[in-house]
Image (tube, rainbow, N blue to C red; front, side, top):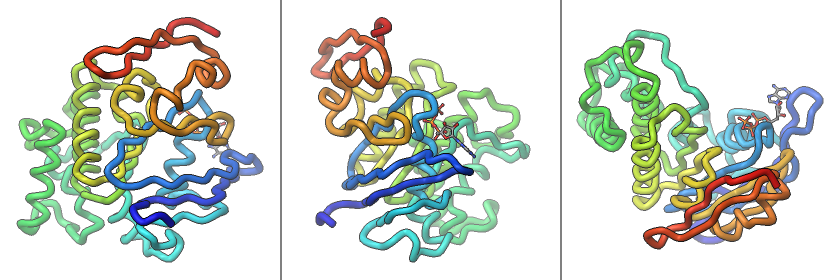
Length: 260
Ligand SMILES: Nc1ncnc2c1ncn2[C@@H]1O[C@H](COP(=O)(O)OP(=O)(O)OP(=O)(O)O)[C@@H](O)[C@H]1O
């Protein structure tokens, strides 16, 4: 394993029922990276995130900071992987602050009403980062979809794990918050975390990610910096689209434009 690799997957495969859903995926990802995981519907992105976090049985080997995932207790896995599932919903009328405090559960904070100073600080940092401090006392069941999404993001930020896995964290957000969430995740990566974000927004992926992983039919078909991983050839072959490409303020602009 290279010295600064945080997450290594070797020959990872996943069967769901009788279907081979992930096939022979190998990855080596260092910390301090924002990685976008993209691919058409059904390509296997959610399955890969869940397999990496050990939430699904898989064949192959996964190492997190040099330790085999299979050797770690469930609690230790939950401390090392913060996982934001797709369309995360909380159905209990808890105050937003208590939902965010659930992010400290893997650290032994079992009662959100009685946090240690250290846990309370982590919760406050996460709420500040996700811009939800003003929602602290509001019941999550009474928040808008976008507000709930940001509270859910704060919950995973509060874990302060070395790896943050987020499945479509911008899906129900307005354009300003989509950009803001990516800026926050970018800052989280810059602070040392390996952040892996599933997204269908190729423009956000191209602009904000250091590395893009492209999946198709359960395989990793392209990986690297956005400009090469999201080449025109990959766009045509994997997504069946052509894109408009430009530079703006020294960033890549990539807009899905037409069918290929
Ligand atoms: N429990 C299951 N049993 C069998 N097949 C499954 C199961 N769950 C998912 N699949 C299949 O596995 C494949 C990958 O699903 P996955 O949810 O990982 O894709 P995805 O890339 O995240 O898709 P999307 O962009 O639509 O969210 C799909 O073909 C899906 O139908």
